[in-house]
Picture 1 (tube, rainbow, N blue to C red):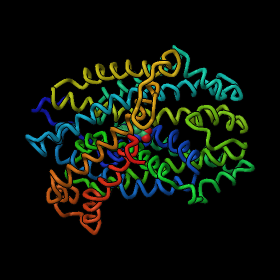
Picture 2: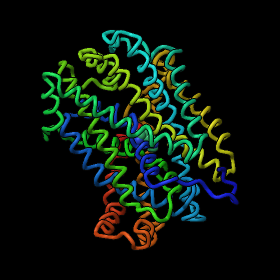
Picture 3: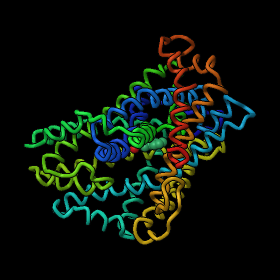
Picture 4: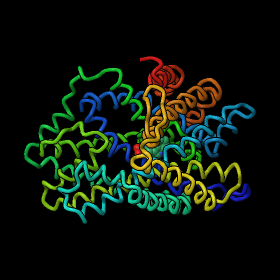
Length: 453
Ligand code: TRP
């Protein structure tokens, strides 16, 4: 299945396989770990409301733009830009994405490792011992989290080596429905606990006075991260797609599934959290340090906790493979590397950066880097802040490229399959890509750097 020019390039086995894989990329730690804690910190329903607007008015359009660039270019993120705008420097947008993949996956692999560790901890340790203190002890340990991170990264590399149909598509098809079912079980368990209705109110009753600039910005940043946008992931996945597929309906399906899972994660977590009287603004430790004590209040709590962390690990894996695939596709398509060598070399490099990330939580925490607008951060937080910045810049460049370089006569032909699927959404999409998204994303970047506030 290697691509040597003469052999046909890999493609998705079926439409549903592509949808599962793209949704698998989108659905990850971003939905199940980051979304609930951001919602908890930013007033619940009000944050969710702004998040939904961000997905609908910006995220969906950028996703369609990425699918279109990928399918029209038919290559990796860098190659697709070169193909569509030869002789221009726009391939740098793709190069920025490949660089972002290193940044994102290095810390993503660390958190992925935590999810495996907590799967085992849930059954080997009494849940009452899995407190914030034990969480901090674990992530600051110089060895333990690194071992789990290596396991997580090894799994990521193996799945990517197995390739598009054999690896990514097959795994996503199995894992995505499992995730959905487990979340439903957790919701049923949570909402039947006495006292859970306060959690439902927190999720459904928006207090609009809670909306301010910083809530809007974190909602938008989260929409980008959660939908896997701005890095070229969706360009790469779009490049494996046949000319017959309906791009707008695919984008709508993927964005809806991603949003559905984030909302379900909220419903799985907050009613149960309120039922045991805990603080919804528990921060990044919400899932790892707070939920075990929620599970402890349930019959078969340890089992439910283990299932939950396996779910989180699966979701993280279908995302991490999409991040690695982005770099592998580039080395394969542009430099002629084999899939296997590319996955092993890049995966190992990223794992090494990840080791430094993990150590930055403990042993190396004195080493800090200043990020504009955020102050001195340890390596892990620095790479997180850099991610938000890189994804925003990537998303902005993608919109500008489509609107002003590739141009809408060609872009619209691609997204409508030469006019086959058309409608009022076409001019709306053009308006968003040309005007709305660049202005809003530009504001996010300047605000993130502390240039405007
Ligand atoms: N969207 C994934 C999540 O929510 C993470 C992810 C995968 C990602 N690929 C990406 C984020 C590309 C940004 C860009 O966990």
